[in-house]
Length: 258
Image (cartoon, one colour):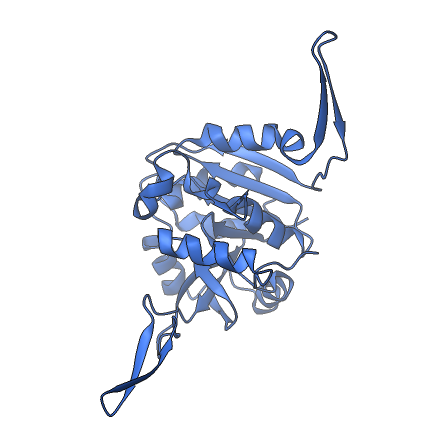
């Protein structure tokens, strides 16, 4: 079984309107934490084993999964007999390992701390707890296995941060909402790794996005999986509201499950 490691320990300071009371992965889109949306996306491609790296207010994520049946079912609470009966629970076929990796630990250090929960012989997925995409994870994993390198990084062409006004002869003729950047691919935050790729991480105070990725490049062990479909981080309140609107419209591109 291919596991998925999710980085869920950051504070989300750029969306402080929401994250000052809860960890960023617990910010809701359509009344569900974005963490749930990410896990549902992977689960639709057969991933059942999740390892979540906790940090800032990690106890809230623990409480969410501990009470998952309560969140998703009707309940009868018999206060005299001190019993609880669940009705119509909509459970998930997941095994979720929640690991306290420290509030101040950087992303590389967080992944390094959960290595003991990984099968040393099998690749695993790695992603962040704050972004959604319509990636075909099955195809991404097959690509990783074909090339044989230690690491695969999804690269995307990011949307512009602002809409654009199209002007002809001093006349505004239309608005274009969030056109894609004309050039340049960036790290999309969805990886497939062999566990020994983590050998390039030196300790807790190392960000995965900096020296470890550079080391993999130097070693010739990093391959790019290009994704031209939907990709959207949730860094700001405006982006959170954009995802909310997509979900409410019934046209959420990342929803690969029925």
